[in-house]
Every structure is written in structure tokens, then in C-alpha cells.
Length: 158
Image (cartoon, rainbow, N blue to C red; front, top):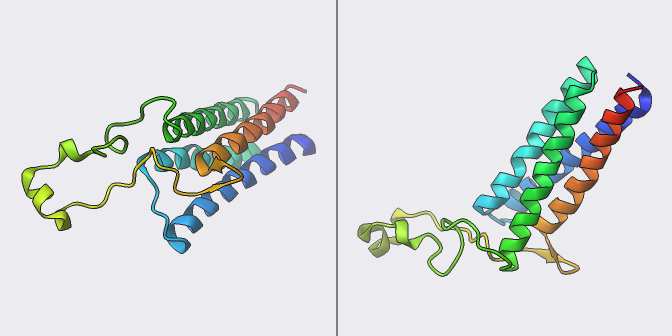
């Protein structure tokens, strides 16, 4: 395995770890509960960490290609969530719209809110910086990580 290939994988893995640590910090230190789509966006980063360990330990091109694909999926999820937040397209009925999943509640749950955990809305921007939401930053970062994984895959051929 070439040192530059390993560096690309380590940079991508460090980025995914940073994304996950940031998400958990916002949740547990900042009190910002994630919506359903935010939780979806965590999974590719966790998978990428496992792929990075495997790619460094085993080598080969297959795991680096899987890392690239995983980060492209993460990019897509971030773009999709950004579109839902900006109301470019509809999101899951369970966490978007006026009802916010209210249609799935029983009459008892509607009359006693203590029986239901609050729904964090996916179509509401909970935090933003410079006009971009966390979903937007995830999409941008994931695209960069995908490029790092792709570069590692290219270097695997040599």
C-alpha cells in the first residue's frame, strides 16, 4: 500500500469521524435533537470508518471503491435533506409537513402528549452558518470525502 493511498483513506476517515463527533456534540452537548433524516446521514460515516480500517489493514481496491460509493450516498442524503429543508421537494411524511406525522397518532396520543415523543421536523433548519444547514455541510464534506476515497482507489491500481 502506498503512503499517499493510506493518507487519502486516513483523511477521509478522519473527516467522517469529525462529522460523527460533531453530530453527537450538537445532540448531547448542544441539546439539538436530530431529525429522522439527520440520523440517516450518520450511517454512511460510520460505515466509512469500518471501510477505512479494512482498506488499510487488507489493502486492495474494492474497499476504496466501497468507500467512494458510501460517501456518494452520504452526499446524496445531504443534498436530499437540504432540498427538504428548503422545500424544493417533499420529505418523509413522518417528519415533514404541517402534520409532522400527526396522522399516525392514535386519539389517545393526541389527547395525552406525554405518551408521544416529540417529532423533530426534517423540513426545519435547526442550525445554520453562512446560510448553509448541517445537511448542506454534510453534503459538501461527503463530496470531498468521496474524492479522497476515489483518489485512494486510483492509487490502488498502481
